[in-house]
Length: 308
Image (cartoon, rainbow, N blue to C red; front, side, top):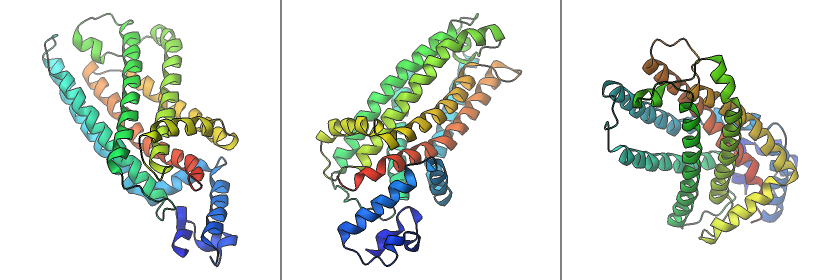
């Protein structure tokens, strides 16, 4: 049982009840569960997440790969659109979008696994051998999430385009709002977009975290059970408080990303250069925040796994 005492990088001597670790397995889990709840059910959840990220820089690897892929493809697309500004440019864009969906799913799935393993270096959970079912469940949840994001993104694009004067394909794709009147006018729609994107981001990522960390017997029934359990968790006292803090922080990040996606923040040398610059800045913010976001969700949701 000594090997389990290093959970979340806590040395055994830092938990008084476990100093000698001469306990029955059941009592050991009860005491460790009590200690973990004490660590995670307070506002130091952000500090604990930073500690995990500091000790596991590999958590930034896959987001970095995603950033490189997205920036490269986006830059190539908009430069091509700039040089060939017509409605027939790149007719196979739907194939590209579908390919990017599967790339994004692969990155998300392995990021979830790496984050879980970084936190639970000595897991108290019996890993289910049904990896196919696990992948299918995550794929279904992520697909639903992607459809929601597409709808929100479509609405966001329509709102931004309604303020633009030029109607050519390039302008509609890259132009940002520049005047203070346009920025003020977009605020009500922006608030709705930011709130819904933040809420759905927390819900669907929490759902995937639960599937990968809570259940020993992985089957399709977990799809329904995990959603039911998620509703119970986010309405619970301590977990709800942590989720509220996550909502506040994620909303702040969403405000930055919405601004970079729709509003010109710098005097533009050209629409193309400004678009690529703000796209890269937005990607860097996502690169830094997403590993932190997932780590916080695991720290919030994991304590309820031990008695499943």
